[in-house]
Length: 327
Image 1 (cartoon, rainbow, N blue to C red):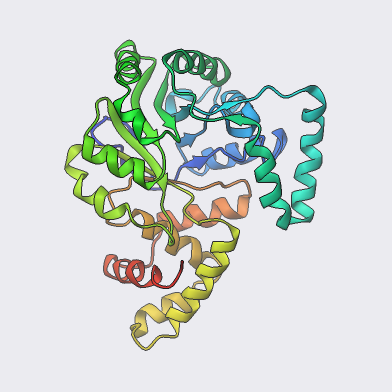
Image 2: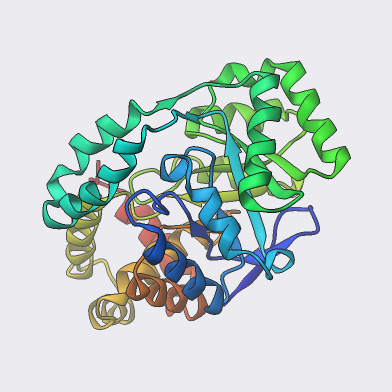
């Protein structure tokens, strides 16, 4: 496993993080705990969750798992999207929904729409901040989190002086080590320009379909910020489209013989190796947090991070050419 410094925070973590969005969401307790354990045993030390993940239950499972090893990991969570309290009968239905998704993957879009209705977004008041953090600390069974992200806020959050001041106070008190924003490109770009204190950590989607932030990130590298990329594979539909584009590139006359050999002889693991290193190589991004609920996905991702066969020049060329005609 490769380990990196997280900006100028003094914190260090694995470049491959564990995204906990699926914990108690797409998978249940037993599989979640097994996946967390396998990731930790493989050297993963960055775990990213949120109050809203797993219908509000992800943090509790992660907190259960982290007993005995909390001091050896970097833990980030989020506030701003509040899960609506489930009635008992809805909890009973969740395993049935997971079974449906396993049998009929195409049902994901419909279920996502239903799931979105279970949350209250843009809950960005000072009261919600403190109440949410206390609930996170209780469920995570810890007295502090390393990074607290504001979850999917509008750009206007950068002008909420009272909220930002309270985040600063939480850092001073030791309840959080860093404050950040987890958002889409437009909010992150504005935050980079605004240089808003105390925001020093930023999380956002980066994949072959969305590389727009890379140039802004590299320009801000000397400011000691922490950058975390999520959704590196872009979803099921985009994975298929990316694989097709990769095959086309491998057959192009513009590709060197050496690069073509790498693209065509790497087996199934070549896709993970390519995507994760395209995100991390020369972009200023320190950590990438895919969902790794299956052991096979974890193994492929760890191998990809630890032993990249592509040179920096090859990755730069591929990043440029793969992005063309994907949207």
